Image (cartoon, rainbow, N blue to C red; front, side, top):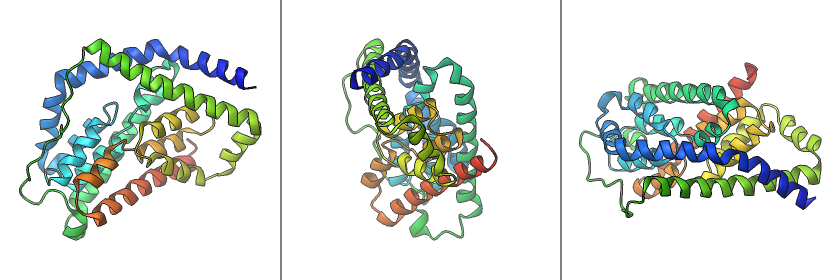
Length: 286
């Protein structure tokens, strides 16, 4: 059984390699050529920072969510802008879905939904609720910015191809490992029982997925995407999980922002938005 699961997982994962490598080449190119310009756009978003944040947050990986958390802790951006970035962030889900051409349509819909949702939540927080939320809870921009450095640890620049290859191998190993784990679980309990358990969660499935999304590690976005690609969870649940997934952004937030109250409020709000939109999509039949 183990040999069968290993071979099946290796075969499925290997099919992604060329597309995964191409995706990371594109991502590295954009980050190196436009990274500083994107950083300035986020910091200079001003009153409409939530709109800028939603657009920038949908970029692959979680670098911009970490940047936004640093900016928020240093009072450079507002709560709405931070939440827009966090909601729009999909960490490793984008390159994984790019690696499966037949899922490009799903990826387009997912990113569009997350950008619109992030901008909407940011607008509510910064425009409609700005005067109603106490300053101690709202945090963020207060009229001036503290000194901030988003790149505390500068690594020597690697070549574009090498950096893309390292990312590809790293995520390939995550995909392979999680595929083996999922395969063993399915073989152990039976495919019908496994999918039946997740399906049996009903409206609670997006709640469960949103909790997975809060894990501040690329493994959570990889796991959610793999469960979706395998058919174990639906579009509504993977959307719930990825809307709640800010990658390492949450870890950076707890380090960069001294207010535990604000950090816990943001974490709870992120889960509530992800779970709520997932349940709504499920009710609508997605």
